[in-house]
Image (cartoon, rainbow, N blue to C red; front, side, top):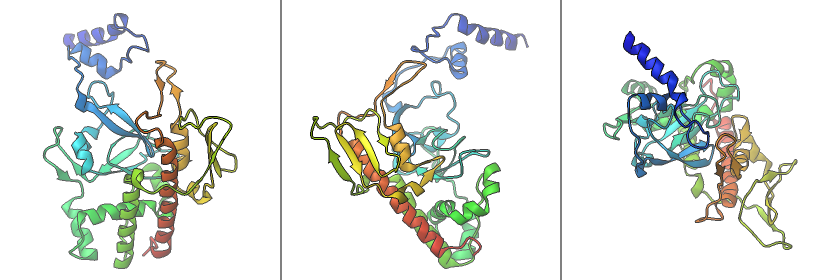
Length: 332
């Protein structure tokens, strides 16, 4: 008991002697605990990781158990950068989310506030902290249930793709809307094998384009250049016109001809395109004063190209979901 009291006294007094300047460091509870235990921090290059901060918006993250206040189980899903080439996680809102149901797959460390509140991740694999001891997250029991219903050739990846397809089905979301507000998703089994195969195929296609969005072809937008000023790729803050047919990239470039169906693909309270327009802007953190500039010196065209690619992803997603609606009834 005296030892516990001493610890609480030390922790409560830390604020009195550390540098609390917001531009220097944010002293989280975890970091104060590390100071109390006299743990040291050392910069390690391999801890710089790519993360999915918002839908289709990646940022660098220094992934460290002391500097990240809460990593939850992400260090067991993506313990090393090499794992990102083989593991995939399905992200859904946590119970009580008020932004509406949605889902997105990723092979990078996702933010807790990716597009929903309290994001919950369901990876295909889990690992030990060093990346060894790979285990499938789809159980043998689940595989047996699916094989009994649909055939012995069904694989665990089929089940994973089926889940992703089902989570996108509008009828599934409508039928279980109240459940999804308060609980994690429960996945029904369809009666017909043909319906299962369609849901699995569509789920795999959706997963492929959502994971590999940077490799898809750009949507053929019309580029309108302002000849009165020098052309620039630099993005300070993009703007969508009220009719949502045009994106003003900067004073020198406007993209027009945005198909309205792309706005049907929503993640939380925004469409995928609106997430990109909102996130790719120069901003300054009010607390620290640090400026964030998403423009890439090595690839000046990246942001403009990304707009076209995410529009393609959105349009294709809407097409695939419509195909799912036509071919699969959740009551099957």
